[in-house]
Amino acid sequence: MDWGDDLPGDLGAEYWHDAATEIENQYRHVLQQDFDSDVVSLQAYLHQVAKLGTLPRLPVQHWAEEDVYEGMEAFVELIDTYPLDPEILKDDDGVYRRSMVRFCSELLTAKIALKTGQAEKAWWHLSRVSFYDGQAQGYYQGVKPAEDKKRSGRAGGIAKEVNAQLIARNACIQYLESDCPKGGWRSPRAAVDAVAPKVENMMRKQGKETDVRALLYVWLNGDPDVQQAGGFRMQCIKE
Image 1 (cartoon, rainbow, N blue to C red):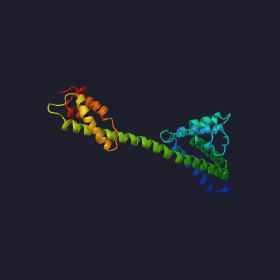
Image 2: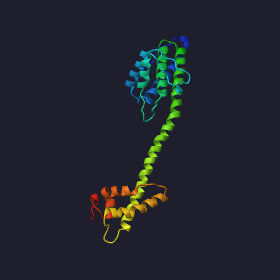
Image 3: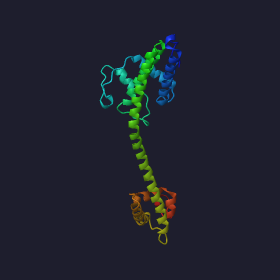
Image 4: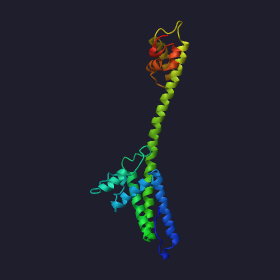
């Protein structure tokens, strides 16, 4: 992006260049962080921010309070439409998005100041950009680990259950084959009544509570390996 024009000589070309570079870096930061490198979407969003002009002041410790912006529907809409992947950060109270709306506003103001040769003003607004970015990232770091922990906990619970069922299934196959009476199992129920208690007892000793009886009926009706071990075809029909 073209961020600015030449500065008056007394401000120094290097000072201007550093500010222009910082603005460009911050632009790329937000582009990659939340807009998934979609330049068109970011530019459209910044256009909406620019149209709003002055943003309302925040109450002290706004992340701990419910903010009410009477007559500021456009600002609320900017918060609501700021793009976030809910799988990464839900931000139910809007703290992260609210900070990033202000980040965008200060970035635009810094750009305008630099274009008009006001390097000092541009740097002041860039300091505000850094402030709001730090505020957003601080919230992110505080909330994200908790969300990750919940998500990994759910995934871990599912993995443990799948593993327990696999252990139970293999044990059922073993008992269906080793405990099969001469002439084969009389019926699926007879096989379940004989095998399920043994496997459930084995699972309890391992600290796993598994409804083997229910699972074994399912496997005898749909798992070829379990059916073969018991000598049954589909729908538990005795061979």
